[in-house]
Image 1 (cartoon, rainbow, N blue to C red):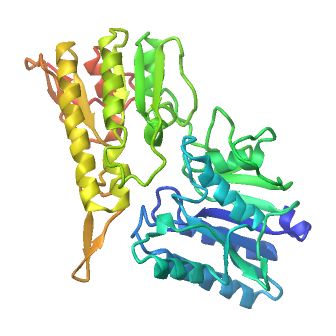
Image 2: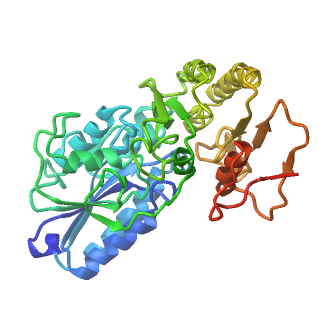
Image 3: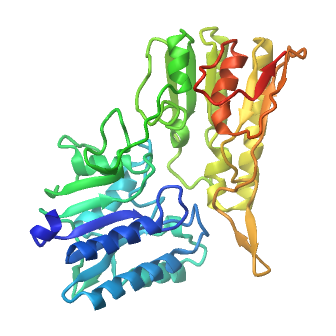
Amino acid sequence: KRAKDNNKIFHLIGLLSDGNVHSHIDHLFAMVRQCAQEGVGRVRIHVLLDGRDVYEKSALTYIEKTENLLKEINQSHKGYDYCVASGGGRMVTTMDRYNADWTIVERGWNAHVLGRGRRFASAAEAVQTYYNEDPKITDQYLDPFVIEDDGSPVGTIEDGDAVVFFNFRGDRAIELSMAFEQKDFDKFDRARVPDILFAGMMQYDGDLRIPKNFLVAPPQIDGPVGVYMCANGIRSFAISETQKFGHVTYFWNGNKSGYIDPQLETYVEVPSDRVRFDQTPRMKADEITDKAIELLKSGTYQFGRLNYPNGDMVGHTGVPEAIIKSVEAVDENLAKLLPVVRQLNGIAVILADHGNADEMFTVKNGRRQVSTAHSLNPVPFAIVDPDYNGEYGMADLKERGLANIAATLLNLLGYEAPQEYAPSLVAFQ
């Protein structure tokens, strides 16, 4: 309504793919069609290229679908002006997370808002040019680009415009939302801050209320296991490196930032390297393990959780040699960590929430195709209990999944799980 009534531009920013991890192209297309039906005359799309949750060099396919839709609308609605305005690969443009590298967001701001960046006549031309210049480059690492016409950017973001960030997952959407909304923002020089109406697909952070406006109400996650532990006085620690720190804090706490109880919890973030992870496949596994061992030996904590990002983050690069080294690094560190758990008469639970490094290629039309996306294979769930003497066994459940982990952990700690939790994976004799 704001864009229509004031003859301003409606901007859509987000990940252009059907990977369905951070976004889905169908959502974008539905909003574009709705804009056309509602009489919004000018729409600009700022495309973030995937190559991570989908095939590593599939950007041109999604761009072609998008351009076809925009052409159809422009031809069927007299005077409408719908086009792609800017873009870039998701790992170097806009979609940083956990404050790992704000220059990624800055590059996106420069392209989307200010129209600063390498210029092309179309998004397809930009992608094809980058492919030609570096045949080994994949979509997630493509430099930012700006679309121009007659020497000027076609879609800078100006006062009075409306902007929707159509990613639905929060971790890589929070930082750009902050750049648009925070008056005291200091992560980089924004040069100018347009007076716009900004909204996210979701509210990405419930505690911090980021962003203020959103299209779909966030899910209500009541009583996550961390809340139960704090309510029972269980002292715990969480540790990972920057790339997965939010997974053991923000996601663990039900999409909320900050501590549940700072008197009972300790959060440790090991800074990640700001490089492509195929170049440093060990990542910070050694540092995470050393700190976890220190925390365990302190005798302060009853429960600890840590995340080794290696298999996922290096798996997303699609470089087999690096992926193998990354998994070896995790194996080596588990070999250091588990004896300490044994010495302390503890129990270790080893699990994953999805695969990645397990599937480095797929076969299409008889040819190998590099896979940088998550796999759909079952993941392991292992209990390492040095003092096990048959006290419990696997519960007879029809379905087993991540939802069952919370009750399982509480049972292993000696607590009954709340009735509203999915049942435990273990049954005590």
